[in-house]
Figure (spheres, one colour):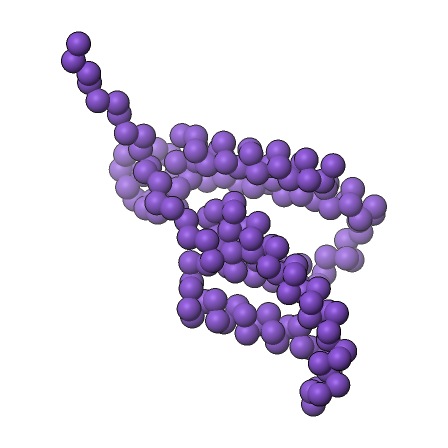
Length: 170
């Protein structure tokens, strides 16, 4: 069921990003002044982006509550709830759905591998093995930001305006 909802959200994301509203979102991201000069209201575009983000966050929260079974406010006071999604996006590449999925897959795999071998590796370390995961993810984040700041999957340059069809002579 979660996979079905995830695929629906991915399809929705791709449909919106290829629509005129998605092009307006990218145009505001790239050059606000140009969008304003062309007569578009940046406040309205940002409002639509915030509403869409709120909708997607609500769907994600409801899926999380369904998956976990219960949700309480004290569960979200940890810094990792803010850091981990950013690490996934930076790792995979922000701006692409494939990059976000790949970043989440790589992060989850590394997380579980480190968690599995943390105590074994911690025997050889001079500090508590609990901090090993944070240190390794900090190192991965630093290496990605230095060597490949755009992430593993690079966003393709999409035109902000649809090209018009050429006039065909009959």
